Image (cartoon, rainbow over all chains, first blue to last red; front, side, top):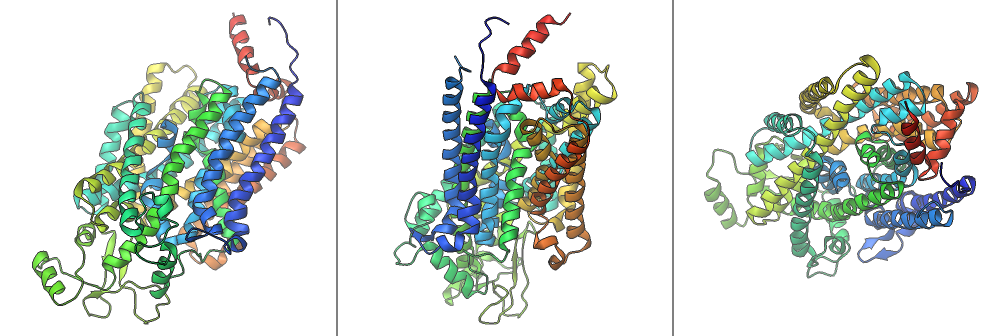
Amino acid sequence: MQEKIEIDGKGYWRAVLRLTLSLLAIWFLASYGAGILFRDFLDQVKIGGAPLGFWFAQNGAIYVFVVLIFYYCWAMGRLERKFGLRG
Amino acid sequence: MATAADWMSAASFLSMAGLIAFLGYGGSVYLMGWTGGFVLLALLLAPFLREFGKFTVPDFVGDRYYSTTARVIAVVCTLFISFTYIAGQMKGVGVAFSGFLGVPFEWGIGIGMVIVFIYAVLGGMKGVTYTQVAQYVVMIFAYTVPAIFISLIITGNAIPQLGFISNVRGDEISMLDKLNEVVTGLGFGAYTETSKSKLDVFAITGALMFGTAGLPHVIVRFFTVRSASAARYSAGWALVFIALLYTTAPAVGAFARLNFINTVNDATYIEDGEDYDMTAAAIVAEGGKPVPVWYKDWEKTGLLSYEDLNGDGIMQYRGPNAPDGLQNELKPSNDIFVLANPQIAQLPGWVVGLMVAGGLAAALSTAAGLLMVISSAVSHDLCRKTLFKDMNDKTELRVARGAAASAVFAAGLLGIFSSQLGFVAQVVAFAFGLAAASLFPTIFLGIFWKRMNREGAIASMIFGLVATFTYIVYFKFVDLDPTHWFLGVSPEGIGFLFMLGSLAVGMAVSVITAPPPQEIQDIVEDIRVPGLRRTLSVAQEHSAP
């Protein structure tokens, strides 16, 4: 134990949970929501030649997933710096 | 990329586009399920497991739940999952070899067993990661190059993802509408619809997602990265590489279905004994359509069959509700679609060869990753940590090789005899169901709920594994009537419901038994905050006598 910096572990964990939950909400909406539950409603709109709900189930959800993970990586990096866990 | 290659199995490569070709919208469960799982992995498991600092899943379970029993159960779960998964891979290898060499499917599996054996067991495990990167490159080329050609031919758009939502070339109708029109005209369900209930689609997607997050051979990849942050990014990059293939798959599937119907339906059959070229020319001269060469090639594998029910010598491909009342005479297996697709579209020979190479690369890399998990589970977790604690490194290695060898052999046999289990992707889907219900709840609660204790973990793993396995075996071998399914959820999707059950069982049992020791609760707090646990464990090592 060198210099003991007081790390607000509890506050950090709360922030992580908040971030995780909101991202999981988007995750749920893009896949189970748009692709399955509200699919019929979304199918009224078309993206190119494909019904929107169908497109979400086969292509769109995957794009959303990729963006989600990278946003998470970035946001977690920011949190770690804010709580002095990095550097 | 190694993670991507590891996980991108024969199922994704060979079987999935074929499944989508047949299932249409119903195939979405595989697309969303297998990619969505990576979000769970990145957000809920990977960084924390990295902080825990162990090397295998049973190691984590054994230490977090301070129990040898829990460790052994985790080994059993790992073996069940990996074994089911590897049987699916062997099927994939069988398809690729039988198509490539023109031999029956069973021979193909036999050849595949020998190759996997040489590759993974004798070759050792060290080179596996590097070859997996090479295999990923082969795979992605093999998948996208033919897809681009075919997309150009059908829609005039070179990017398959865009071709998927474009119009048919030189026509005002969109590719998907055209496909719907063609398949319903033959009496199949519309391509953009499914016969599955919403609940079943939901459950299968769930089982695949949570299963991805619980797969031992994927999780182990994240134990060895540099930091929690690196674990998050590597999950992200793995998903990028996977997405490249997975967003192409729906396009490949749709094109394949269209091409298959165009070339084979209502074609005149040519018997094996006849001279193909002469007969084909005669048929064309009469204004008919001869059976294509690719069909005759693939017929040898036994994965494609034609029975002339009405005796007219013409191959009618029809769905259950055909408007013209004709019976279906063609039975193609989904698994051949991706491999045969370049041939169907009459692309040059090197594209076809590329496809076969990609299929083999997919199956081999996953099989190798799984074998590593199986052999380390047996040699490290079971033998060294539990049964014979005084085992040395040399014996451990020997046990590991023996375990891998017997796993290849048994999985090959299982691949041959599991024909009733359906297609490669479906066999693999069972492995995901098992993973979702048995390992995911235990790992997840182990990180996010300090109060989760030994008794809860043991109960939850046993419940998930036994319930899911029993359900699958019962409805796949004993009672084949789908109307008896629990809430109408198919064996593919049941892992999701039992995962919820397993979470509930684990929490209930934990609450009524004693809480875990204080030092375990402290560890759980530490792995939540990156960097803490590493300094701790280093300090401990230094202070050790």
